[in-house]
Length: 156
Image (tube, rainbow, N blue to C red; front, side):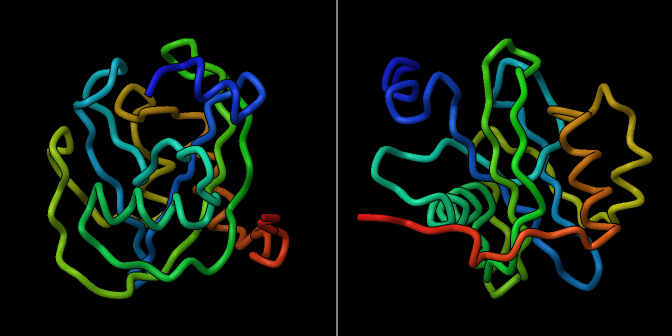
């Protein structure tokens, strides 16, 4: 799908759904090599498809990239920024509980790690896809500063 289609659905920003999967106090990070930013660590995330609601997109992207089933619990924030590659982004970050499955990384994903939020904050910025955003998400998780799912409404 091209940039023009994304713009039509997201008011000039690329709409992204991202998920911090939590298991035993640790968050799942995946190493991506499929993007222009090079090999970097990120939460499972991706574009929201036209007609898809944001929470369904977060579940779908997590399943596609990791093979895991999740239960989305709440949101860890909404972030508007320009990516390292120059794209305007509107990112909805969710916190989810592991609900089953075995990790099977999608093509372009080379590694995974379960990390504490504090370990993510200690990572070198050069190794993170969007360091400012990822570290703010980790801080929000440490503070348990969440947005309830009741905040999100899908109108058909």
